[in-house]
Image 1: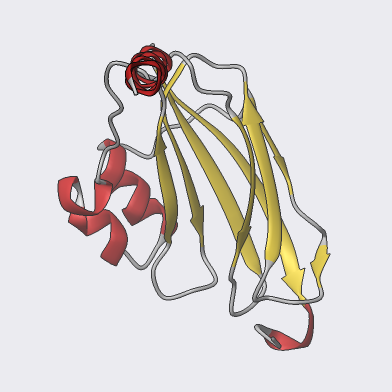
Image 2: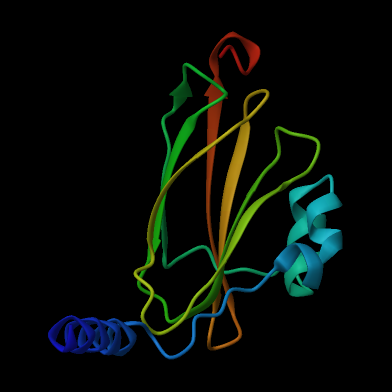
Length: 150
């Protein structure tokens, strides 16, 4: 019985040593609610960052030129910029914001997501650098058959 108690305490202590001291996620829907109701990409970016001035470098964005299914468009993006946040926007749906990631020093800034677009349009990725500058990549794509064909 003592051996089991010792093993369970040891395993519990090891598990606590592996878990980071603090895990923190930002709830941008609560912190910046107007980002999520903005109807244009420029309005959403301005509501998120206070400006739309961005440098067109430092961000790699890959999407298909033509998406066969608007319900699951693969979007890959990455950066080597020392970032605070990374945000994705699109201009094909009524609300422009797709997602925002809070970045920490342990983040691997290489993402592969799928988004829904009702029609052809442009995807914009904004990286907020720790230097206070915004970096951007844009890609326009066609959605075949007019949208989410499911």
